[in-house]
Length: 528
Image (tube, rainbow, N blue to C red; front, side, top):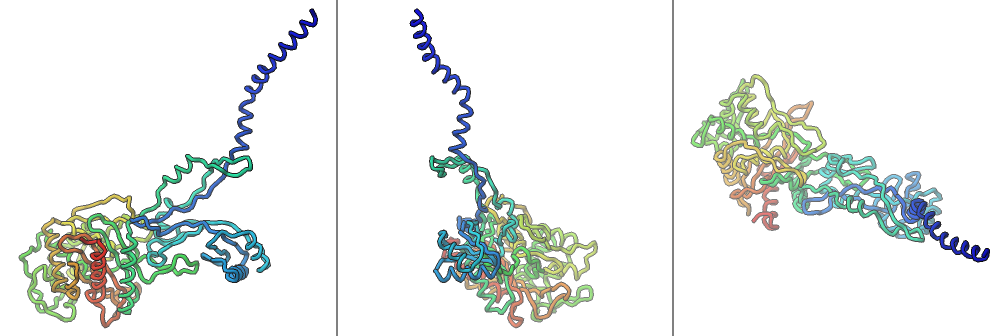
């Protein structure tokens, strides 16, 4: 009987043990799962690269490239490292005072040999290096960034949306400890973040830069800047400046983006706006005639004459624009009140800041006094006593290309297209026709045979230098244009700084650049 009891107890124990172990494992399952997860998963802080800057067609204007680098303690040691790399034909991407960026992944043998060659301590680390594929062609606009973020241009203005960030990501590893999978959720989240797309067309940018540089050289000028804007959307398609700089060099000498940052007296480019304002205020109409005899006018004790001592006689408003008559504009301007002049200029965006998120100083200026003498009114009428940049001028001229509607310029694709009414469509069409006459038979007639019909206005101003005043022999030669004339699609403004004082008129210096670009755009399908 005792034997039977013993056998029963053993069987009962054997049957109960699995259930006990199951219960015990069930109690500790969370502990085992955590332990297993810690062996198969790990967390790592990842530095994501700075976002790309792209043109409207997806071409990379700024990109971060992961490069193998060697960091040295001094410039002298870096120079030794460079010498050894060149001796063994190890391709170099870039270098600065203490770091060398290499084209290829470095192997440990090469790093050891560098240390032995220079007898120095070398740190090897892969880092992201900002690279600008189009270099000096667009650098005043794109700018450049450094370790702390954007330092100039778009890189600085849009730093908040471009800057890199750190993220803590989860990864899986195999039995040998190798990373085999990543955190899919975070990967998708990162991939969905868009890069910064500009309205710039790099192909037009390249051509505009090329033509601008060539014309500056031919005119023996100090420099120049130009803009091409889509008349219908406000997209800034090209913004060229010269001189410029190479953003990929650490010893670069920064040049401002003059298209945004240079505020100048536009001179005769304002005359069509003054005529439009006189129409809008009922001062003159299409049938009005203005007697400009004898070719000069006395205003508040100041004598103002036509350029070159000419006398145009009796002129229509259209002829005042096409001949760029100083006396004609002066006589119309003094018929307007001070409030009317300023309100008209502001309706065209003169004195109004551009909404482009550009991190620069707005130096636009519009003389606004409670009392405007005749000389003040005349000066405002032909583009003095005010300052604007060429993008503001392009914005103003958009009214003549869009039947009276002003288009706000855009620099990024995601900006909304915004419009405002400046003048009625009949006045806008009249001014556009007058601008065409300026090319066909006026101050820009040397481009009258252009393959694309261009409407435009020349502007030549004496250069005002702070502290010196108006400087004899120094001029700004400009041309503001709309094309094709029959169906306006583009606005282009060019300014050349200090051309040869023996050949400085806008029609001779700046207008041919527009003609060359318009022909290029026709050949390449920008114009139908």
